[in-house]
Picture 1: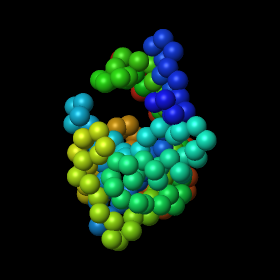
Picture 2: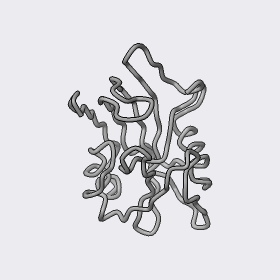
Picture 3: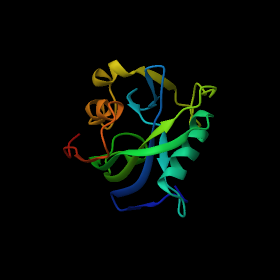
Picture 4: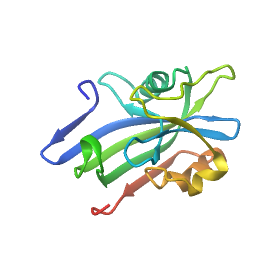
Length: 162
């Protein structure tokens, strides 16, 4: 996280992150977490001197091997939660997230695993409401993105004991 816009102090952790909404053939691409098997969106920390759009395009390529373009910000989320597993386990987390609807070239070829070795999974759009996706609000809000709703601002505050 040396170049990422974020900081950690004591038990508090903040990150500025961009995520990719990648849809092809009625399916959306997610990463299956090595911690518990839940799904999260392709993306990562915005670097110093990088825009969120530049970040999501870079992260998409690094994680999937496909060059996709950020078309529009679909969701801005203030995500406040207690970390589980990995480097953020039990930390007080606050993440400012910009989720971009991405254009996916017809000839794009996607890796089967991301750069951390986690599996990349195409989830049918109709299965998203019942899938274990984190943050959980995405299960409901992504339907609005797919329907063309304008920019959404979400404040997602999860209980401290989660």
